Length: 333
Ligand SMILES: [Zn+2]
Ligand SMILES: [Zn+2]
Image (tube, rainbow, N blue to C red):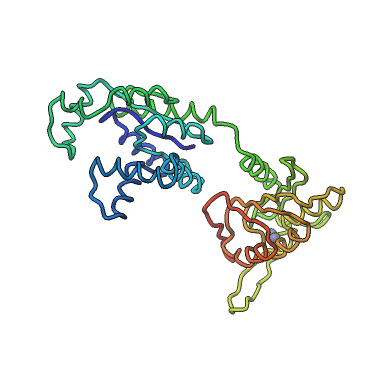
């Protein structure tokens, strides 16, 4: 889930962001992103330069550049994220179109926000209520608030604000948007993996073509042969060219191999298909994938020792994609 935050000045957006970070959300901010860019360009951080650099980046890379970049960064972590300081309608409309993105808006009566801002003694220093109100384009803020999936009037206590945020998250969890095709097949892959019989690497695999599911496979012993969860693992030590040794359970056929075997057994051509799996396939699986005619491999994450397979795929001109930016590490290997 990605939550975008918008709303009026001193309405509590920062507090909400802190709550979300405490709940394990990754934090991104349009303003912080622009500040970093100004620093990179050796420019002073002020309001005019922030607006200027934003416009320049849009001219250079397209109108959607800033939001797209933050969204992609958030998505790559595979974790819940919050994107702060959304200040214009275009940004919000753009984010709302993305998978599982929701907008929370905050507002409160002007005098309450003014008191909060002055108590905080922000960088802007002390100002009159009129000056405070003038510093914000109220009409623009209200347009943003109107677009929110959940609006919070934050005029009560911190505890009340926390309750409202929980309500918002519950609401969003109840109506997470339709998954993309990649998410859809990866979810199926994870369901298949639950049948795995070696708990060292509970992995699953599905092969699809033209958005249709063809075959499935999970890691397990060949038919009729005892499983790891019945008789224990069958560990072997592999000595590598550089002298390092790693431990592997060799009792099982891998998920990718089982999916290919299933296709062979029932006679389903998988030539030109896309293979989804948990992580970078091992080199044996990679070779089988190449010979089975698979055109693309989509992994949930990287395997820490997946370089050899990645090279094989590259030589065979098979595309490999990772949905998450994380790396799977094995214990006691
Ligand atoms: Zn095992
Ligand atoms: Zn394998």
